[in-house]
Image 1: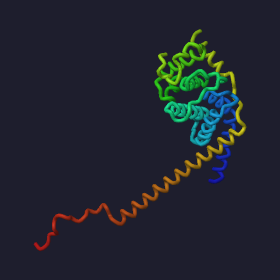
Image 2: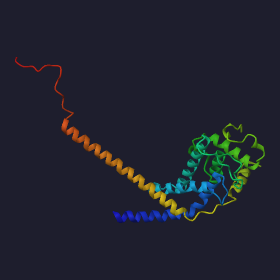
Image 3: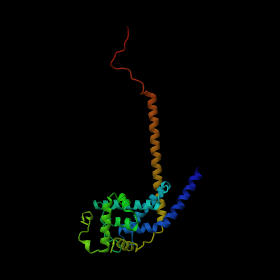
Image 4: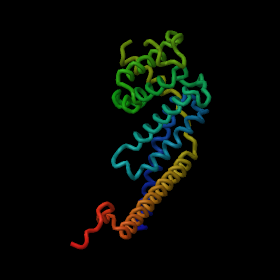
Length: 168
Length: 82
């Protein structure tokens, strides 16, 4: 019994190490895009990524064929959404996006939707379920984020903390 | 510029800068993951212990007071002498 537990733990450690070696780079890139930090100075992204990986490690035995990458990404996205929600609610200080980040011009929700939809290739419906938004809303936010990224001058007037109030 | 082209352009923008992975990431994740697992096991154990204690307490109480026996009547006086 104990032998089996030990060998299971060793297998989990091996599999998890391989998973981290393969996926950590991409996950860290995703997290850095979300937090809009510079690629070489991303403490917030690391603080997001480490618990996501720890959560995946703790769930490893119960994944049952589910993709561990999906699990880590989901945790990352919901944690980021919750953190920005608290930030809007006035808890914690607002953080300025780093101008070296490619998504510095976007609001946190726009970054989240854009990264999930286009960088990670998550389907619109799945993104909507993950974030608790209607699918049309996800589409609108994504389109607005694409426009804001490609033509940064136009939406500058309507942008700000009130991303929800922006007319398009 | 149609939708697909715009999305491809945005993807290219996002792919640009890759961040270097910190070397201690795996060790830190394993450490915190183990702590999560340990805490979860502890909670399970405590809950099981509580459930067992509740079951034993109920059994002892039921064996002593026999709650399934109808209690003696308080209103009707015992009938005697007829």
